[in-house]
Length: 333
Image (cartoon, rainbow, N blue to C red; front, side):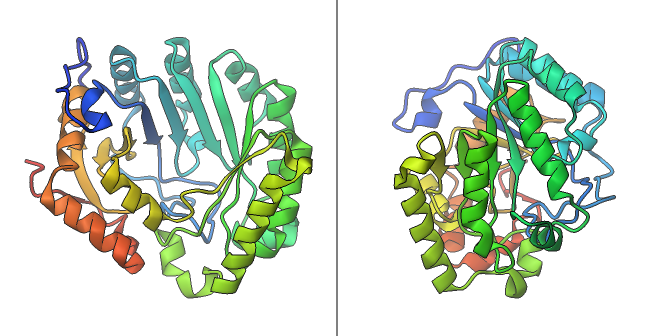
């Protein structure tokens, strides 16, 4: 069965939560693949070369889902992975969404982003191109991102700005690279980025497996937070928005209990996760329409099973290590 498009968004009951007042998500974070051209030590999806899932959505299924997103008037879609640029139809998918009026964010390591891509992306409503810069020297970059070229990542950033597109930088702190955080912030300014994203290392995926090697110390985190606060207040970074709250997935989980995010996280095979740091699947876009998936997501955030899992994972960070051991909620059906 293919992806089912909805004729029109289903009406939402007027309840106290924001998600129940919305007929569709405000953001769809779409992981196109588990394949990647790098084998980053901190990867939260455990992506790596050759890790493409056997049942990832085909080009036709992806286009059908894109059409469903347009029909539901979803305003914002992030295309990520793995490395989305390894998906043969990623650019056509971006164009289908963008030409339909959806604002786009492309999340990439920058190793394959070239002027031909940027020329086509520049015709679309791009909210940002996010490039990961996890170091400011090739030695450190290569340790955290084996096989990666910092020079190519910097060239991608310059290409984004030369194309007139908004550049966003992300930095994942580890024990290996946290000493270069300030240099990366300064680099983001020099490259013309409008935003710098960071926070504590997520204990998910490859990072969870290498946690003892990668986790910064409490003192390193204290100094990192102080650095972020100082740089955010500095006139030297006046044109750069430093985003680092919530600082951890634990803080984000507690916030989600108060106000569930109006976001659908779509996995490469079309499954919908109830929460990024948890393994629970609440919908399958090969079986459910987008409207049904949104209804199931909203219902999941009232499900005692999920609520209990969120609280436990917020109280004990180590439980987040199971985030990629996907399993359906008992109410999945």
